[in-house]
View 1 (cartoon, rainbow, N blue to C red):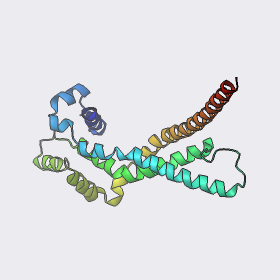
View 2 (view 1 turned 180 degrees about the horizontal axis):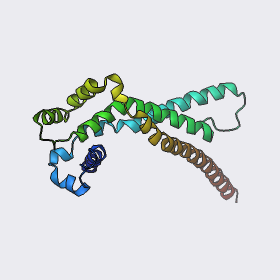
View 3 (view 1 turned 45 degrees about the horizontal axis):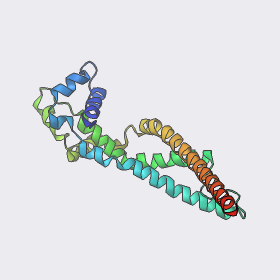
View 4 (view 1 turned 60 degrees about the horizontal axis):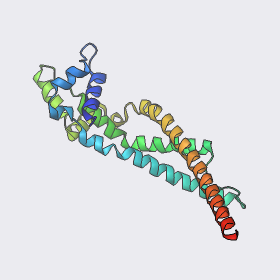
Length: 199
């Protein structure tokens, strides 16, 4: 649903200075197929959160197993992470997910930013070639080499890692609190049921 807005946003952010059109003008002048540029890659990028949560869970399980081996007597649930551990693991997991999906992000931006306004036939042909995934991959490879697929990853990591790490830290704390509340509720209900039977 929001793909046309995403395309328009990418075009506005990557247009040459002074040549940016307004959002409404971009959306009204674009054809339906142009509005949905890079839809396939956008769908592929929905794997980013899946990779992030899988990496977080795997790292969490390894850390908890190591902590369990180090402790001989555990007073707390083995499923609990400290806030700091959850924050660090969340940050690492988001870095892993971003690193794995960033080439697709670069291709998506390249496809969406391909500008067809120039009158030069060579530039127009090059721009049309960039509108496909293979064309975007070729363009990035040709212009920037292998490192071009990771151009700007620092900004992407800074933008996403902090929020993701905080999200996973809060999720872990809420999960732990919910577990404690459920155990307390279960104990209360069990004690109430025992009192009713004895009365």
